[in-house]
Length: 622
Image (tube, rainbow, N blue to C red):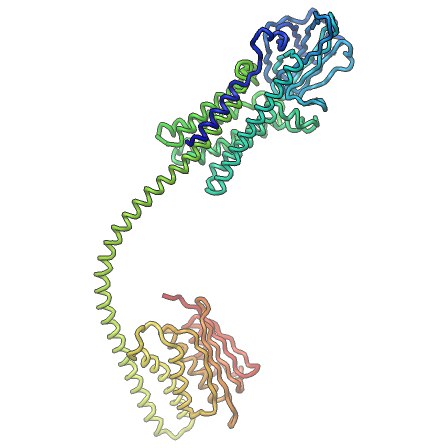
C-alpha cells in the first residue's frame, strides 16, 4: 500500500470519528438540550385523533426519560409528543428545535398560537426554504413566556425514531454546516473510489471492478436518502414518495452488486456447493425485492434478505480464507466492517438500538474503510496476477529452451533422413515421368505411323485428335522430368500451355491464328493435366470450326488465382458451336466432365461475340 493511501485512510477516519459537535463544557445547557426526557408521549393506534382532541386528553400522555425513542417500522400509528418550554430571561429568545431523524416521513409541529395551521415537515413534506438535512422548527418565546408545543410523527416504509434537540441558533447552524461538509467529504471519497475502479475496469476488462463500481454507486444512492441529503435537493413530495415506494431496491441493489462482485472476485466456481447456493440466491434476490415493492404488508421485513445475502457472502469469504485464498483475507476484513454497519442500521430501523447517539458517523466511516479495503484487494489481485504471469512466463521460457534443444536435435536427425528420402523420391518421380513421357511418345509415334497409311480424311482427323490429347499429357510429364523443374507438385502453367499451343498450331498448320495468353498462376500437377486437356479441346475446336478461311483468328487464354479460387477464361472471335449438338460432341462432353467431375468446378459458356468459356474451381493449398 502506498503512503498516499495510508495517509488518505487515516485522514478520513480522524475526520469522521471525531466529527461529533456536541459541546461538553459548562455552556452545554445553553447551546444544546435534549427535549424528549422532559416531554410526554402518547401513541395513537387509531390514527383518528386531531390536535383539538389531543389537547383535551392530557391525562393519557406518559412521561419518558429516554433521550430518543425507536419504534422501527411503524406505519399503523401516530406518536404525539407534548413538551413545555419556558423563557426565564428578561428578553425574547429564538431557538431551533431539531427533529433528529431525516427518515421520518410525516411530522406536524403545533405552535399554541396557530394550532389550526401546523407546520408540516418530514420526507413527504419538505419545506421549500429548508436548507438543513433534518427537519427543524423555530421556537420564539417572549421574556418570561411559557408555551406548550405538540408534535405528531408517523412514518411510512421508513423507520420511526423520535429525538428532539433544542439548539441555540448560531450553534445549530455551525453544527449543521460541519455535518453537511462531512457528508460531502464522504460522498466525494466514495465517488473518487468508484471512478478509480471504473477506469481500472476499462483497462483490465475484469468484471469484478464493474460490479464493485455498481456497488459503490448503489451505496451512494442509498446513503443519499438514508442520511437525509435528498431532503435538501429533492423538494417535490411526489418524487420522494415514488422513490420511497422502491425502498427495497434502494437497499437491495448494493447487496446484489456485492454478491456479483464476490462471485467474480473470489472465482467461487472453485467451491461448487457454495457457488451453487450463491447463484440460486442471486437469481431469487431480485424476485424477492419485487415482492416487497408490490406488497406493503411485508415492508417491515425488507431488510432481512439483504442481511441474508451478507451472511452468505461472509460464509463464502470465510471458507475461501480457510482455503488460503489470498484475496479472501482482504474481503473478510471488509465484510466484518460492512456487516457491523449493516447490522447497526438494521437494529436502528427495527427500533432495537439507535447507535447514532454514540457513533454518529460510524456508517460513513465503515463504508469508506470497506471501500478502501476492497479497492486495495482489487489492486492486490492485479499485482498477484502479474506475479503469477511472470512466474508462468519464466517457467514457459525455460521449458521452451529445453524443448528447443530437444527439437533442434530431433529436427537435425529427421532432416538428414528426409533429405535422403526426398532425393530418392525426386529421382524416382523424374524417372517415372521420363518413362511415362517416352511411353506416350511411343504411342503417339505408332498412331502417327498408322495415320500415314489411312486415306479416309475423317479417320485421319480422329487419329490427329487422339495424338493431340496424348501430347497434352505427354508435355506435362516432359516438364516434370526436366532438370530445371525442382517441385513435382506444381507446374509452370505458362510454360505448359505454350508447349500445348505450339504443338496444336503445328499439327493443324494454323499460322494465321493469333493466340495470346495471360497466365498468372502455377497449377498443381493433377489439375494441370485436366486444364491441359481442356485447353487442347477448346483450341482444337477453334481451329476446326471457328474461323473462316483467309480470316484473322484470335484466341485469348487467361488463368488467375483469387484466394483459393482459380479462374480459367478462354475466348475466340470465331463462330460459336451449335448448342443443340453440344452434348453429342465428344470434345465438349469431355470438357464438361473434366470441369465438373475432376476439378469439382463450374463452367459457363457465352456465344455473343465468339466463344467465351469461363471455368472456376477451388483448391486447398498444401
